[in-house]
Amino acid sequence: MLSLLEKQMELLERKLFDLENRIEDQTMQLNDVATMGLMITSLLDIEKVLSAMMDMATRMVGGEVGCIMLLENGLLQTKISWGLDDRVIKSIKMENEVDIATWTFQTGETIVINEFPEEATHGGLINAIISVPLATQERQLGVLIVVNKATGGGFTDEDKNAVETLVRFAAVSIENANLMKERLERQKLEQELVVARQVQQALLPSNAEAFEHASIAAAYLPAGQVGGDYYDIIRLSPHEFVIIVGDVSNKGMPAALMMTAVRSVFRMEAGKNVEIDQMITDLNAFLCDQVLKTENMFISLAYAYFNLRMMTCTYVNAGHLAPIHFHKKTNEITVWKTGGTVLGQFPSYVYQSESVPMETGDRVLFYTDGITECEDSGGQMYMRERLNKFVLANAEREPEEFITMLTQEVDDFKGDPNKPQSDDITTLLIEIK
Image 1 (cartoon, rainbow, N blue to C red):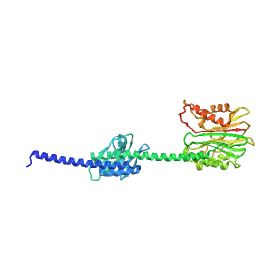
Image 2: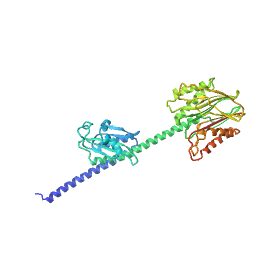
Image 3: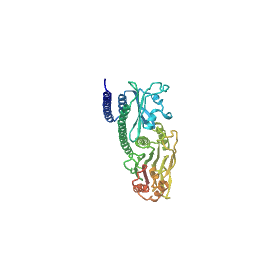
Image 4: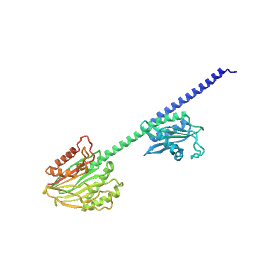
C-alpha cells in the first residue's frame, strides 16, 4: 500500500507531466503562430492577407466558422466571411444593445463567450465565440471573429492568446498592404498627371502669333503639376484671329480631357461662317450632353474674335472674369461682360455676343482668377480694382513687359515667397498697333 508521501510524489509527477505537455503544446502553438505571422506579413495583397488570416485563425483554435470586419467609411464592413452571416453577429448583444463586433472594436478588448442562454436570438447556432480587435499601435482596423469549436466546448485562454498574437501580425500586414495600395494608387495618379500635363502643354500655344496690326503676349503659371486654366490663339488670317481664355473647375486628367474637347470644337468651328453666340450655345449643349457628367465640373471662358481690317472685336463671356478693355484715346477702361453663365451645366442656355469697336493703341487684358483671388498674408485678395489700376498705370508698357510686371506684381502682393501659389494664373494681353 502506497504511503502518503508516495501518493503525493505520484500526484506531483503527474502534474509536472501535464505541465510539460501544456508547455510543449503552447510552444508548438507559438511557433506555429510565429510561422503563420511571418507568412502573413510577407503578403502585400490585402485580400490574400485576410483570407490567410481567416484560415489560420480557425485552424489554430479549431473553429467552425468566422469572419473579418474592417472599418470603411466609419462603419464595420464584412470583408471576408466563412460560413458566418452578418445578421448572426449583430444578434449577439453586449451592453447597451451594442453588437459584439462593434463592442470589440470600440473597447479594443478580446471577448470570449462560451455560454449562451437558451432564448438567445441566434437560435442555438452559436455555443461559443471569440471576438478579437484588429489594431496597430496607431489605430483600430477591425475585428476578427471565430465561432464554435469543431470538437465542442469553449475557447480557452490559450486560444485567446494564440489568436491575439496572430492578429498582431496580421494588423501589421494589413497596414503594409494598405500602404502598398496607396503607393500604387499614388504612382498611378502621378503617371496620370504626367500624361495630363503633356496633354495640357500640347493644347497651349507654343508662342504668341504675329499679326499685322496686333501684338500679343501671354503667360501661364499652373499652381500644381496640372492646372485647370486654358488659353488659345487661333489664327484665321493675317488680320483675323480668335482669343480664348478659360478656367476648368477641375484639375488633372478630367480637366485636360475637357480642354481637349473644347479646343477641338473651337479649332473646327472658328474659321466657319458661324455666329459666335450660336457657336458657344452649341458648345455648351455638347458639353452638357457628351462630356460633363457631374454637377461640380464646368468651364468659364471668354471667346473673342478680332477683325483688325474692320477694327472690331466680337466676344462672348461665358461666366468668366470680364476682360479689361483699355481705350487709348480716352485713357479709360471698360469690361466685357456680355455672354451668359458657365459652360457645361445648363444644356438649353442661349448665349449672347457683343461687337466692340477697336482703335489703334487699345488693349484688352484676359485673365483668370489666379490674379484677382491671390491673397496676401492677411487674407486680403488682389481684386479687380487693383488690377484696373495696374492696367491704367502701365498702359505704355510693351505687352511682354506688361505681362512680366503683372506676374511679379501679384507675386509681390502674395508676400511670403514660401507660400504656395493657390490657383493657376493665366494672363493674355492684346495691343492694337
